[in-house]
Length: 438
Image 1 (cartoon, rainbow, N blue to C red):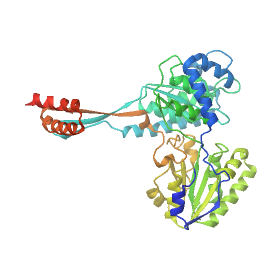
Image 2: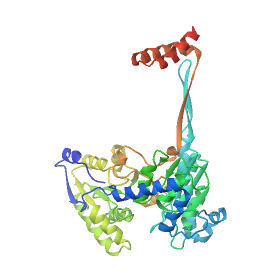
Image 3: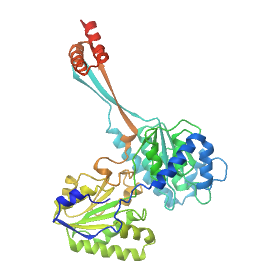
């Protein structure tokens, strides 16, 4: 997440930086070593099948033998091994996320229309048949990932959703992650991580057909596996390190802004955080607040390097410049804490998801409580793509039904164009119908 040179040149003189990144390279740049490793693993798994999957599980997941699939009872009772407070929070997140997804689905309606007499066209929203979800569970198990992937796929009407989640140090699955998947409607869960998990789902090595689509976040190896598997299967998106950006002004609380910047920097030491403000005094106050909060933050070993290496604070001359700078960054998550939130909401175009006002923080969506999806584009992808939603699991399949009386106009036009292109067989499909019509 960084500014592009053409935009900076166009806006020159209307902004200045209070803090710039130490690392002058894209946070999500592709590592040739990762690409090489993933390529070799996928080739091996495609060649040797489940034997290769289990070999990598032994090497990378500490797999010691036995069934990698969780039983239906283990999945169903996962919530019983959680504290009542955690269980209640997971239930709330699952319900909110599915409610929003169902509302989205209700607004995607099949339709049919008669463009001209005799020419009927339409579309039907048909869900993909099988989805494979990757549910991360590393240092920070992302409990809400199942809400956004498994639950939204089920709300779209996907018949079969399987999930893979890496084993914990003791060898089993994370019960909170499994319970979130259970509430979201998962059909099967496998204790399997990394590249081998995605390959097993994509190649149909888990006792069922290959999936049609892979979704879910993961590390650099998981992201690269999805990139290489794309085409054989669909994917949600290629997401890099989590990003946060804030537009704030002198009306915002610097401590709150600082907390929200660090909240997403906590995802990893290469997670960018950016502030664009129209007040230099406010910008300096936020920098000072970040430094203070890092002194006592339990995860400062992650947030500190992320802020040092990838954090940026920019002062814009006016709200128009602030909006132009932010649209150029096109961040994954964008917060508005200004006196002009409505203006920014109406004028901003590029972001994964927007959080409006001081009571809206990214973490509410991260943990599934806001209902919206947090599988979002990074590294400027919001300039051309939206995040995962119920629509991603649906295929808008078109159809047409032509009546006899509509034939002359259609067939003649197709004949003329086909003849001009030299496509005789295309032309014949039209002229033969003309002959029958006459």
